Each structure stands twice: as C-alpha cells, then as structure tokens.
Length: 221
Figure 1: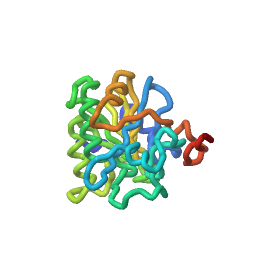
Figure 2: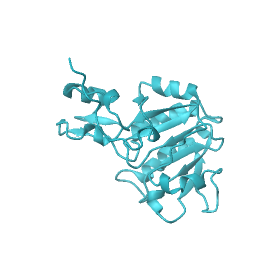
Figure 3: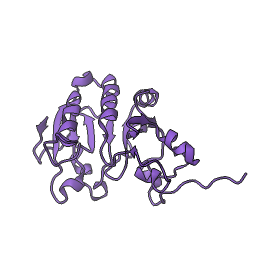
Figure 4: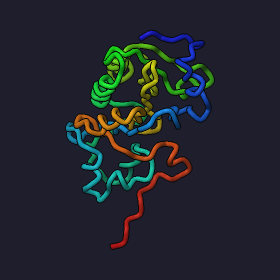
C-alpha cells in the first residue's frame, strides 16, 4: 500500500475523519442506503462461537443489548475463563478475510479495487491521520503487519477503509468489538446471509448517543 501525503484529501474524506467527534472513528450519517455490523470473532476452547450462543446460557440475547456491540456485552456475566475475544477496536483476521471476500463481489474491480485505508484520529492526535491507498486484496497483508506476533508497525489495522468510488464504507470504532459496514442493500443482504461472518442489524453509534450501556429490562411473566 502507498502511504498518502498529509495533503491528500483522501477523496474528500480527510476533513471529516479528522473532526474532533470522530477521534475514535467516523460513522457516516448519510450517503449510504443500508448498514450492518460484523461482530468480531469469539472463541471458546479454540473454536469459533457465535455471540448469542455464548449469551443464551445466561439468559441473554444480543437483541436485548441496548447499546453498540462491544466487550461490555459480556462483562460481568460469569462466562467461561477460556472464552477469548471479541477484539476491541480492531477486526480479527477471520472476519476480515470473509468481509473482504463479500466486499469484492460488490466492488467495481473485485479484489483489485483501489481503496483508501485510514487510521483513527486517536492514533495521531493533533496531527494529520496516516492513510494509505491500495487494493482491497492487500488488506490481509496490512492486517498481518498490524496485528499479532509478526507485526511490523505500531499502528492498528486501519479504522476506516473504502473504495475510491465511495460505494461502500467500513468503520471499526476504537471502543467497539464489531465493524460497521455501510453500502447498498444488496451488499448488506449478502453480508447478513454469509455463514462465515456473524453480521447483524443493531443500533448505530449515533442511535445510542447519550444512552447507557445496559440490557433491556426483562418483562414480567
């Protein structure tokens, strides 16, 4: 991926990505007809498990969580010690692999579609955000450079990435354990139907602004 100069507008997106309210990540409020969340992977004894399969034994369901998807969903529930994840602020490799595969089907040049990849402003407070330009299929190599024992940079995997034509947009807010995808209805329908991903409809960051991270009160029998 090519590191972009600080003067590059990133297709007109740099200004909004560097706004104070976007310090943890920029969530678009218009311009896309549909959206969903891709939940970051959970593993139990080394096997991937779905969020609701973990929550069900303690009488919970993600649908009853009245906030954005994060590690807080599982906090204080007395879950098994060998439950790992979900990763906050950074998508896991499994989810990224299959997200890129679905996005490629809805991109003008497939996996070779040129994209912008931009960090969250919190990584460079007071300075222009670091950003790169590269193909969609270069995302996995960038993830390897940012995550795990073989990482070659102190930066996280980019919080924002989108094709140069702006047809979709991906956000991983630094405070959350899920990645939000914005785009046309056909893309979102495809993501929600993808068995290798755990994609769900859930309130956006803006929709829960000012609310508390809490469960919906149980109805009396």
